Image 1: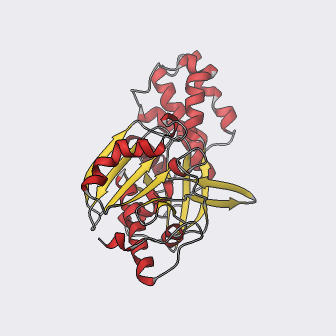
Image 2 (image 1 turned 60 degrees about the horizontal axis):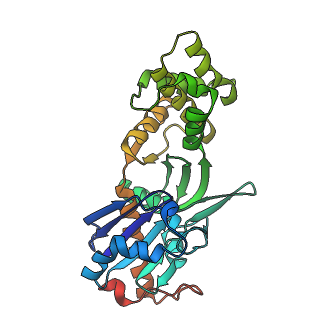
Image 3 (image 1 turned 135 degrees about the vertical axis):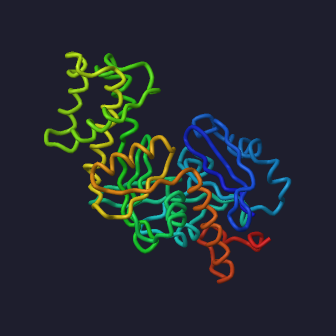
Amino acid sequence: MLLAVDWGTTSLRGALLAADGRVLAEHAAPRGLLSIEAGGWAAAFEAEFGAWRRAHPTVVCLLAGMVGSRQGWAEAPYCPGPAGLADLADRLLWLQPGRLAIVPGVSVENDGLPDVMRGEEVQVFGALELAGLSDATVVLPGTHSKWVRVRGGRICELATHMTGECYALLRHQSILSRTLPPDDSAWLPDAFDRGVDQALQPGGLLHHLFSVRTLALFERQSPAEGASHLSGLLIGEELHAAAPAAGSDVIVVGHPALAARYQRALARCGVKARTVGAEAAWRGLAALAGQLGQLCQLGRPGRPGRPAATSTLAR
């Protein structure tokens, strides 16, 4: 049995998994990094998951996400890429040997510049398992979208795009906000498509963005259309930079509504993509737990300061 936890910046969610990876129970709470005071991580974990641990005294817990950042419970140094599941298992930060560990996240160098992710790496491996692939491009849209290229079951390339954060800034704090509706409840696919197509044309994002304002000024675009147009521009710019090859295996992991936008935008670029939801995190953490079992059977030693898992995993 495994207690799998995805603990991010604004929220946490956990699942109790059976030995075969089935989800037995799930729990979520708005108890992310931003809400935890210094020194309060252990108490927060106990408040959210203590009942499960008491009911299952030998359960092993793996925590992924910002819980392992410098501002988290304890800093788990990044695992350098190329990295596979075995590399992550070898670099787990054990808070309670054999019982409670933090997944390290992954770092990759791009032309001398570092790029990183925490939490998305387990979703990547979970998505690959769900798709039955060892080579693919995995896209994780969000505040900071991640494009991950996996070869032979190892994360080899990583590129982060601040698409979601730029949308929020432009949407609420720029001159464009004055011509947009107060919320994003209405999504208009045709306006979104126009934004994607425009982003793929010459001129550049900084030029294209101003058309959100001018189309409104000349009453050629409604406020709701403007918001969808802006979304399409930014996602289209991200796709233009990532340049996925037509015919390649692309998996989009994330909230269904946002994943659907990326799938639609990719289709306009001639790329067929499949989507995977929140279950990718649980499948990835279950696969990582399986690696721990293999390391135990092999008698592989843990890294300094990161004790190897004990026979607790087999119980």
